[in-house]
Amino acid sequence: MRAVLLAAGLGTRLRPLTERVPKCLVPVQGQPLLGIWFDLLFHRDAIERALVNTHWLAGEVERFVAASPWASRVDLVHEPDLLGTGGTLLANRAWIGDGPVLVAHADNLTELDVAALIAAHRARPSGAVITMLAFRTDAPRSCGILETDARGIVQAFHEKVEDPPGDLANAAVYVFEPEVIAAAAALDRPVVDLSTEVIPRFLGRILAVETRGYHRDIGSPEALRLAEAEWRQRGRAA
Image (cartoon, rainbow, N blue to C red):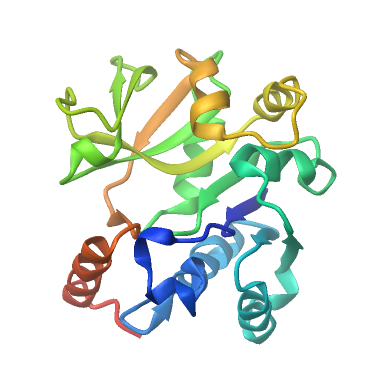
């Protein structure tokens, strides 16, 4: 299976750090996020190749990838104008091919078991076309909270609401069947957002798989501060 790492975001909430460091290269205990992702994806050959999109400070990302021990398995694509998360997939349909693809936001710090997520997707209930990683969040109001049935099929989303009905959140890591990208293409626009325009169309056809490992969105200075402390406590420093 191939993977797309969405890494082109501006990281505006992390300024001034992201004025000089692309968000996907923000370090946690000395390890850039993108490097952590490469280790997760390519460990035990869970993923064959990865595509990374670039935009802001693209040269920094290109240099990091070139120096990575995984460089031979990573392809880069530059977006002069941001295409949105779904637009990136549309622009790279030929690279993705005709099979399922893992898609992840590279600004998350995670201990994702990639092989286990792929296995869960292959064993998903009939009719499901998306497998979504889920996690227990300590900040439900700032996340997309999920309601699932007894099989783990997502029945409702609650995106950053004041009084969410739980703490099981979308971790922004997915395995998509080709039908999902086809739905994005049917919008007939180059710029498409997955979370608001595509994924909600598949309610009742999304399997949520809760991770037992660590997971945190590094989207704010406070989240980064917490991640630094938590990652150190887990013995994950470089």
